[in-house]
Image (cartoon, rainbow, N blue to C red; front, top):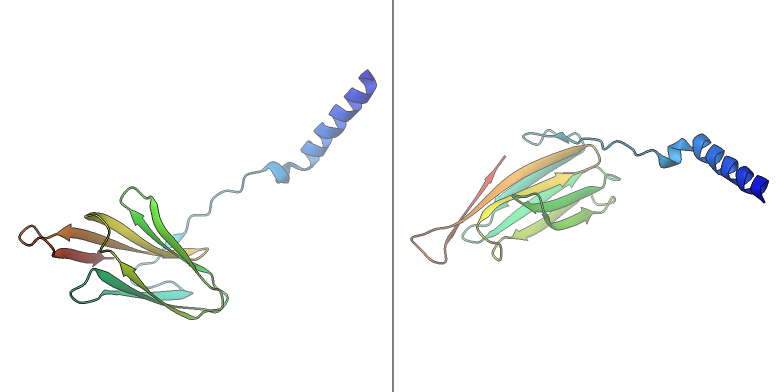
Length: 138
């Protein structure tokens, strides 16, 4: 019985030693941030709908490229995430910020290698109760 246990332990150790790739952690690849729509595989456009708290996000991409759209708060917490189909070449989305609190938000559109980050600043105008200021910065 003692020899069987030693044999099993040696066999397990050798399997783990020979199969180190199964236990290796892949390093996280940092995505390059594109400025002014310079990404090679996709382009975006974003603008505010006049007199509303809605922004239109339009994108064009290559077929076969998977994109993700994320809205994050200033702490980096993901509030909304959506994946764009690999087979779509054009995509449009209305982003409604009416229910969100004042503050800084980030809209990130990314594929496996590149990302475009847009910053949104929501602020309630203190003179008027219902009016809000919405700005987008690159």
